[in-house]
Image (cartoon, rainbow over all chains, first blue to last red; front, side, top):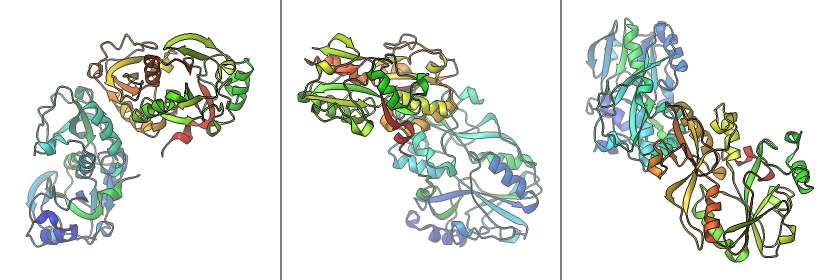
Amino acid sequence: MHSTLSPRELRAAIRTGEFARHTSGQAPGFVHCNIVILPADCALSFLRFCQLNPKPCPLIAIGEAGKPELPNLGEIDIRTDLPSYRIFRHGELVEELPDITALWRNDLVSFALGCSFSFEEALLAGGLEVRNATEGVNVPMYRTNLDCASSGPFSGKMVVSMRPFQAVDAVRAIQICTRFPSVHGAPIHLGDPTQIGIKDLAQPDFGDAVTIEETEIPLFWACGVTPQVALEAARLPFAITHSPGCMLVTDIRNSQLAVL
Amino acid sequence: MHSTLSPRELRAAIRTGEFARHTSGQAPGFVHCNIVILPADCALSFLRFCQLNPKPCPLIAIGEAGKPELPNLGEIDIRTDLPSYRIFRHGELVEELPDITALWRNDLVSFALGCSFSFEEALLAGGLEVRNATEGVNVPMYRTNLDCASSGPFSGKMVVSMRPFQAVDAVRAIQICTRFPSVHGAPIHLGDPTQIGIKDLAQPDFGDAVTIEETEIPLFWACGVTPQVALEAARLPFAITHSPGCMLVTDIRNSQLAVL
């Protein structure tokens, strides 16, 4: 039943606690976002980190300090509209909560970043097979040896997601994703995983391994786990993110993000 | 000195015989075309062959039967404006001539097809290295096991050209060439050459072998030699083409061919 809810209806169900699961597959056609919430004193450094590393950290919206709204993305209250939040103190995950109203402060700044759900939808709409979708698992993600540009306390290696394709489909996948720079865009690597410091595709650092046929080429996309890893490494006194898979569902259509 | 000639000046020099060499590097920025000239009774079949196989046979212009002009491409006399022509009778190359005025007939139809010079220029302008250009040789070309769709007497396997790139540049090359569908467009294959029936990259069927670094990925583009091979195999009583590398230089800019 929930898959027929509009983004606004889905957020209402999340707000009341009626919907408290992963958002994957919900409100198809609409943009789901990674969320990071930080005190204003480190928000500028994080914003600069995102702008220096646009492929893993594509910024879609930034809230005003102390304001829980993100008006460009819909009628949103960032304190209640995610199914689950992660609370970090000094880099440690201390709590997972369905509502952060009690923790809200007038110096908090919300960041909404693009998510691979958007380009996976475009790939599927283009008739391509997305292996993690076919196999019903989370996409495999890997730590690479590629340094992000650092900004203030934020630094780290890029994390990538991997999807295998036959060569003809790999070319088409690159074309399709090129239209969507605000949701990670085109792959950052293809072929030999050792060239970017990945030793074993069967052992992802996050998510689940998927089948790779011998004739297939692995394509690697910059991944939204990158800013999460940089955030944890920064060991900020206080930070909030979405729980994995529990994204902010917005009123923006994926097709609106296409640059052409 | 010739490299500063406009397309019109270059054609004038070709017409008088003053310029009688390959057109590669001449009139930079302007479209060079493969040329096929056929009697009207097989022109429709050839046109259909091109439209069925647009990646190896991208049609840019078609003349009227008996008319040596191609007005969409400039002030052109197709009988005199190529540095060299090949004359085929019953599929055999019988002659190479600098002028076909004496052979012109009122049933001949001229076809101008896109050429890889255009996308190589776009790749170089994009800061990518084109290995055959770096090494000063002809691009390596290979017969594949990929069947073209056939039309009347025209059929055969696709011929491809190959350029190697590091992964990041391979993605960029795909993006750049996607903008130019009328000059072969995006690669039709990448990676393992045996998947398309190529046994040894060091042994091209046409052109010259180039260096491929161990960390590089070969990209394969549909090639304008494909229609030439189909034409020879058709063993038509009479046909004319350009001599290899001696293209029709047009007044159209490469940048005008970009679809976006």
